[in-house]
Amino acid sequence: MNRAPQRPDLPTVISLLLLGMVALLLLVPLLGLGRPPVWVLAAVLLARLGVQFWRSRLPGQTVRRASGWILDLVLIALLVWVGLGSR
Image 1: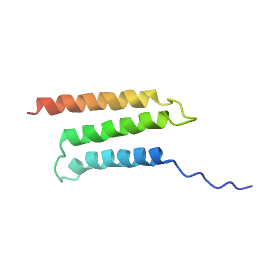
Image 2: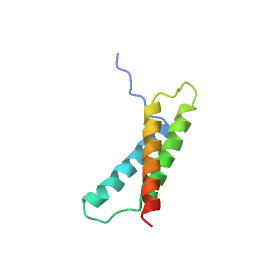
Image 3: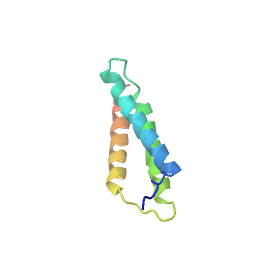
């Protein structure tokens, strides 16, 4: 019996889109197209962290990837620190 693949829920799609934005923001300087402000990258990571928190609050979901949350918080803190030092 073939089961149809389940479609991802809205928070998962949003999280993947935000992760794609992070990848594009990190790829832009490698292509020589200029460097985006660190605040933009920090804001996208913060939005992704919010979506991850939202996903954990959905019925039937638990906090599965606490290390992902910690990694996002560390990256955001480092980006803010770099952003404050570049003034």
